[in-house]
Length: 320
Image 1 (cartoon, one colour):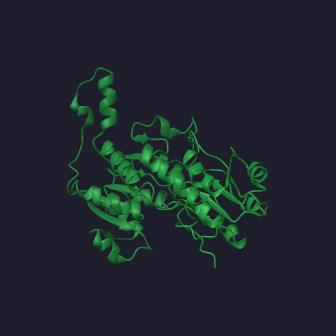
Image 2 (cartoon, rainbow, N blue to C red):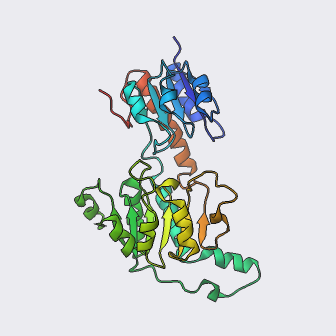
């Protein structure tokens, strides 16, 4: 019997790193481009393993995959996969939690610095023939300002270290991180309301869960400093976008630097596109040539190890 692995969807130019993992093991790799449950079920009904990027891997999909033993996602978050449904069927779910720590932490700091130093409006003014530093007024010294991190896992831990090199004082909110871990990074753990009130910059790094969806909304924006800038390189729905738009329009906060939004690609009618206090990038914080190759290889290795009877390196739902 030939083992089959279906890639439900992907944005990459090729699947060579995956093939290099599967071919020596005699595992057949079947690429697809699925966008709906029905398309996933049709493409993967005979699959022994799945690799997915954005396709919906719902309970309905999972219950129609009779041979599937493992689902591995390109990425850290697994919000596109019904993990409980997979566990109920004895299917292992894998991810790659360590492939882009430097890239995302670098991107978060790049967005923060770009917003704080008002690089975009200054550049645009020069393009229009205006050479005047006063277009950027006011800009404040970073040293001594406060960066609040929402979440304190691997990526925000690196953000903290890099931010401290600029003289920023770092605080964090994460109810699942022991205080000793934060102390080892010279970071103080606080409650979310306190973080919102104290921070000059807020950088979001929480996973998208039922408990974190919409966790930053009207109440949190009201607590923020008028000059605060919020950065999001995690998941768009963690921030209530309507509340964010109102806060930006009313200048309740100073700006937003977003690599992620609620709907991706962003809708052309979204007010964020026309705001002069918003910086947008297209969910690219994870990317470098090195991180992309590492992600693809490790995602495939998760699947391959399960199919040959071994334990994968990265398991979201440990199954006995």
